Length: 291
Image (cartoon, rainbow, N blue to C red):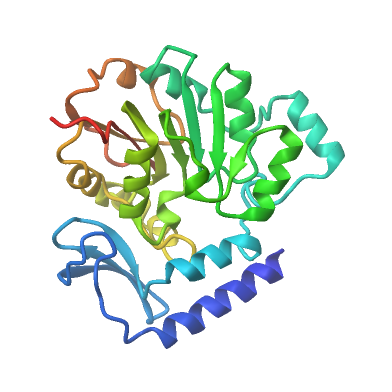
């Protein structure tokens, strides 16, 4: 696995060198105005759009390349996100409800106490979060671009589709955990969410925190968190700008969030919590509600 990752990184560096003359255009708003936030290996840099505030990696990869990359080449040494367990391992994990992995049920309950709701896990890998959500009583399904991982999800008796046309239109919550930082087109994801959510439906997005307050707190990890597999590094102000016409709640934390902050939110205002230096960014948005 480590050899595979090294080969992928070597290809990434060669690709960056080959695309070094690529035009510096924001992948969210198409602005050509930017400032350099950070650099790696001379040929790659983290740029911040002066107009929308998105922090994005230069050079960029195409959507077509990333779809192919996530079929078989993508691998990380974190939990079981990309490493598929054996039959015996899976049996034990299912019996234990994947207790060693994060469970998002409490956050969904904080924004909607009704269990009779439809939840989509966007970028669900092989479906362990869907399994947990179903056990919590939700009607949960998933979307995953990697066909091999989606097929493995059948072993969990969960439903995972691999194209956007297969996503149902009646979702009350679209959950996405550490996916948006991988995407080539965040606009496309937001458009899909708007179409696949009900009018009162919410996006609940977890991703690395790209705020300068976090960089000041942990400069080395900030430097590590963008690049090869993370072409986007979201800043709270970018989220606020992207959803400037919608209700939102923006929080940062260290992998755990106080549900009280969610419960106390009126779902109609725009709030950025005062804590900005958490390792992780969580934003909840109602994209089909205008304010």
